[in-house]
Amino acid sequence: MRKTIIDTNFNFPNQKSVYKGKVREVYNINDEQLVMIATDRLSAFDVVMPKGIPYKGQILNQIATKMMKETEDLVPNWLLATPDPNVAVGHLCTPFKVEMVIRGYMSGHAAREYKAGNRLLCGVTMPEGMKENDKFPEPIITPATKAEKGDHDEDISREDILKRGIVSEEDYLTLEDYTRKLFQCGTEIAAERGLILVDTKYEFGKTKDGKIVLIDEIHTPDSSRYFYAEGYKERQDRGEAQKQLSKEFVRQWLITNGFQGLEGQLVPFMSDEYIETVSDRYIELYENITGDTFEKGDISDIQGRIEANVLAYLEK
Image 1: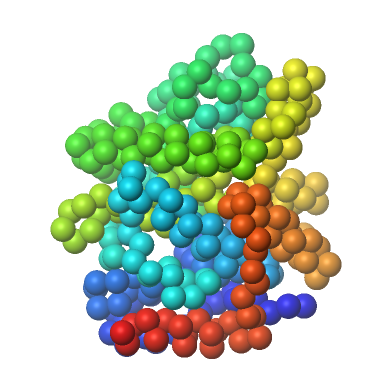
Image 2: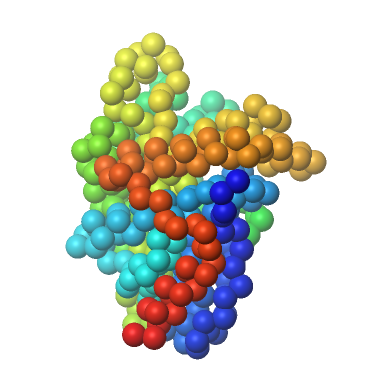
């Protein structure tokens, strides 16, 4: 089995604290910068799987940082540097406690709600007469509250966000504007690769000087759902499932093996052979989404490599 990075316990110069999320670990440096390390942990149904996926952290980090650089003229982001394949360094930000989910197609959670007879999702009305994976007349924004590790994100409407004072109206209008701009740009980038950006989520934060910026990941297979454009219409007309490019294949494998993150369910055993196939699929996702050939980082000592690269950056 190839080596993976599952957990980190670094002690960088001027380190103030460390936050460990589902798949990322964030080190606060002197209340000025954040060092975000993308681990190889795999999360599905808000549960972290017991085994890591080789190169997954590198893949997510490199897709996110590439997309941030491609959209920085459109929407400001937190990114300062990428000193290591698994690491992004950025401005210290205070995150907004909502995830901005935007959907161009009725898929995933939206489709499940629709099938259950619900036509209102996060305060947004979904049209009658749609079938799963149909395109919405216009993309809809369906926010979710940002859950703590181990908890589930929850749908919330714009009205409730404002009423509960989670985000001010002025800031929320900016979040909506940035979300629509990023989704439009992501849609265009995907189209150039023969893909359809179905839905995605963005997270934002405020810098010390009050500037709203994009943080965390953008347009990765963990945060987004893609369809292959070729054959999309034909599959819809025939009522067939769409060919997806996301981590949905992991969710489907888990469902087939009796796991959906529900109480009392046990995570099915993942053999080394299965883990290898997941790693290969993530590499395929990377190459399709970015249009670049994936270059595997040196994993003989990932912890040592990351520590050396981050220290060299911080000592500049």
